[in-house]
Structures are given as structure tokens and as C-alpha cells.
Image (cartoon, rainbow, N blue to C red; front, side, top):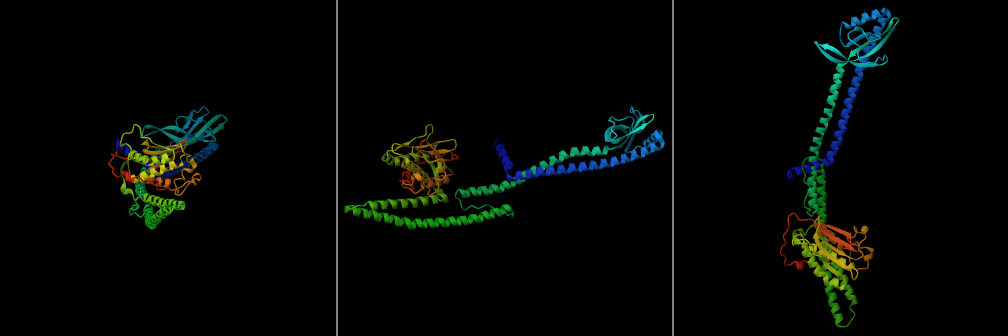
Length: 494
């Protein structure tokens, strides 16, 4: 059953490919063109044959009319009889006004309506090798008026071969179109399968590159076709991107090492100067503000470095099974004093009906803890006194979730896509401390784990949810004696 399902999915993928659609349109146009061409050929051939037949009939009628004018009705009767003695394609019958047979090689008047101005077609019976055979004829009626009565002369030509050609055409055309469609669709499926295989290799490589492996390259088949040209151009672009990313990381690391150390020394000297001034009884408010500004600069550098490392995937080696409920408990315990200081109720809601270990995911504990710290810190900072902040790990149909909900002012829906960008701060938060990197870091951590950051209305307030994909196999919790050390003391960037 699984094999059949996979085959059906592959078939649907082939049908949805652009190559198959192009081939299908081409096959339909080709089938229509072939049908139109064959129909035009048949129609033109039949018209030509009918014109030649009509000319022969007109010539026969003209000759017999001359015989009638010269010799009268009896001469016409003898001429018809003489011509009937040598049967061929021509057919004759002379009848009176009641359509009674007088002369000719047709035994009876055919079932046609007399219409002297038009050609008529009818079936007649002829014996071939002693066997009666129904055949088709085309002719014209020539009325003759005499003092003794009216007569009708029917001159016709056998067009049975034309009818055989018509039947062959009407039988062959549907089969021709059907075979064109069948072979065209098979060819389209084969072309689509080959193109899909080449595109799948490009998509797989792109997915691995997006996941952080910048060393991957698009395979080149060596066929020197347009896909190889595309792959070579993509590989050259990836080489340049990798060089730029490597240079950017090197510059960032250099800046971080060159600036963080002086900033830390500056902070230490400010603290030493503050201690000396406090001992002397002097005002140290300016030094306290300078220390706070220095801490913010250090936090900004730390956040930028962490975002860069996360986007580059350099922390992927630290992936391990971890329990989101455990991370939520640690962060809740860490932020309870800050929430109490701001008169905000911080509540950890443990998932009901979820057994221990069901909120396990594969991830980097330090990064996920930092992302949750940023969400909780923002929620407490923007929630007014007397408000509530709720941390809730749990399961959903889409994956494993951990959400932080507050009762603050929230974020307008039209601004939510912007707040996850770096250094973006809303007008309402301009006067509060921060750099606008908190949600950008959370977004980077979510992208690093193939997760989603969902910002929703909490009515009132904001509900931020990190939704992680379910692991392929159920992960068992593992002992982590140093997990407390992995929880940041405060958010890396507010």
C-alpha cells in the first residue's frame, strides 16, 4: 500500500510539473493541427473528386440531350440502352413520370427526390461476381417534357471508392489522434521525470544550503545542457556567497574581540571609579548611567554575534534532545524575581494531558533558552503593573509549541512582520531601553531549528509562539547537569 501511495504521489508530481504542462499543451496543439490538416486534405480531395464526377455527369447529360433533340425520345431510349450494355462507373435510367423503368442499367428508380437543379446521392445494388453488393452513386436528374408525357433521365457515377476512403478516414482519424495523445503524454511524462530529477537535486542542495551547510554545491551532470549552465552559475554564486560570509564572520569576530575586551575593561574601570567616588561620598549617578550604556553596548554586540552564528549555522553541532517544558520551567524560575519587582504575575502553565517527554525536540538548548528569555523579558517589560505573563509549553497538531502570552498593549497586526527585523522598534517602545534585536534573535533561532515564530493577538496583549517540528522518532529526556548554566542571566538584546 505504501509503494502504491508513493507511486501515486510521484505521478501527481509529474502531472504538476511545468515540463509536463508544456508538453501537454504542445501535444494538444499538435493533435488539433494534425486533425485539421487531415480533415482539410480529405475535404479538398472529396471536393475535387465530386467536381470531376459532376463534370463527367454534365458531359453525359449534354450528349444524351443532343441525342434527344436529334432523334426524340426513342433515340434517347436507344442511346441509354446502348450505353448500358457496357457497364462501368456510369449509371443510367430512363423512367416515365411515374418512375417506371424504360431503359438503363438500374433496374428501379432509386429512392431520391427529383431535383433537376442539384446533384443527388443514393444507394443502389450491383452484382459483383454473382453476389449482390450495395454501392453509392452520385448523379443528376434531367427532366424531359414531350407531347405524349413527361420523362426523367437519371445519369450517375459510381462513387463507392470515395465512400470507402471516407470510412477509412473517419476510422483512422480518431485512432491517429488517440495515438498522438498517448505517445505525446508518455513522452511528456518521461521529459517531466528527467526534469523533475534534475530539479530535485537542485532543491535538495538548496535545502541543505538554507539549513546552514554553505559547502554544498549543485551537482553538474556533464551533459552541458541548460541545467548544467544553471548549476554552474549557481555554484559560482554560492562560492562567492561563501567567501563573503566567511569574510563577514571573520570581520565580525575581529570586531567582537577587538571591541568587547575594551568595553569590558571600560566597565571595570567605571566600576572602580564608582567605588572610589562612593567612598569619598561623591555623586556617582553619571558613572551608573555610563555603566548602563556600556552594558547595553556589550549586550548589542553579544546579540549580533549570536544572530550571525545562528544564521551561519555554526552552532548546529550542539543539537541534542531537550525538553521544552524543562526549559520553560528554568526560564520561569529565573524571571520570577523580575516579575515580582514589576508587580507582574508570571505563571508557568504545564500542559495538561501531556506526559513527560512528549515535549521533547531536537535543538540547541542554549539558543532556545536565549530565545525564550527574550520573549519573557519583552513580555514583562511591556506588561503594565498588575498584568499577567504566561509561559505555556505544549503540543499542537502542527508540532511542539512553547508560547509566551502577556496582557500588555500588544503589537498591531500590520506591524508584526516588521518587528522581527533587526533594529526595528515600534513608536510606542522608543522611550524604553532596548536595541530592537530581541525578536530578530528569536526569529533567527526559529529559522535555525526549522521552526516558526507566530505573533498573535492575546486580547489584550500579545501571544508569541515558537512552534517546532515534531521529531521523527520520540526523543527520551537525558540528564543535563549543567542546564542551569546554559540559561542566560538576562536577554541578550531587548
